[in-house]
Image (cartoon, rainbow, N blue to C red; front, side, top):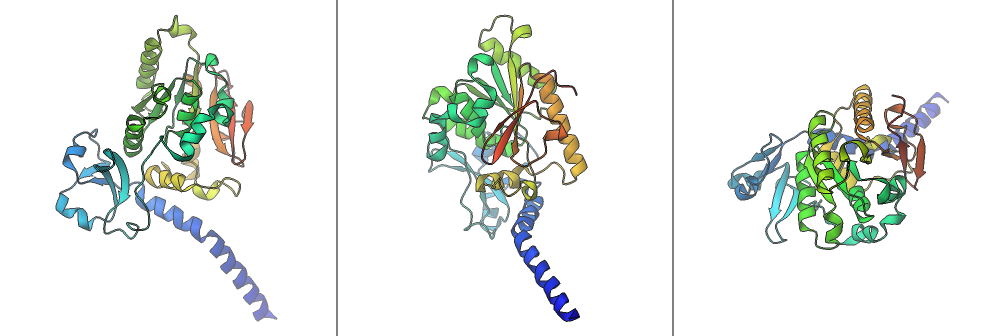
Length: 314
């Protein structure tokens, strides 16, 4: 009887371990790679990059021995900027180079029906906002949907590799050029460079020749903060591109208390900058950002968009 109970318990825990293995492996990969420097072997391309310790120029003869991530300018594909694994990496032949492209596939189809997207519904029509600030630009997908709906969007991204990938995609896109002309991109950490954020907003408003822009401008803020892969819940499936985003950018901290403080700082910054509303994208079953109850909500199939107003009681 005792042996039978032990066997049952053993089977239960082996099954439980099997179900969580892929999630655990994904977390380990993220922790292993997102803080490592990305290599560049093309000196001409490297000279066009903002100097940063996150990107290292290495001699071309070392390329065949690279095991980490490489930022590459593909001369055969319209100088497309790609992120790929080094030749000696076990993932070199398993994962294709990653790049952002707004000119084809599901992204292009979604741009054509942007008014039906939940993120657009959360902000409403462009006449309600002079501009929207996307404080967590990432892949630029939601920002492009807002721009396709007629909004002027300022994108802020703090990760230099993600910034370079998105910057390249915005330069290369040829379809719907008028959409992407309504978007601008800046390499900034909004929580620590608030003065630079305000300067970007002021310059954009001035370029739109708005009257009384300093006092009457309507500014919305959008947040889509990183969320731990193991906490998204069953209904929020993690797409491959989102896994890559996690691997590249990762969490600023694996500690829940630190993450909560970072989330709170991001939300407080957004509420300080916004004059109309703040919209926060969350997995459908996730807690509100900073555990602050939203004043409104737009719900989709896998995500929801929590809405806050600037007079929210902080």
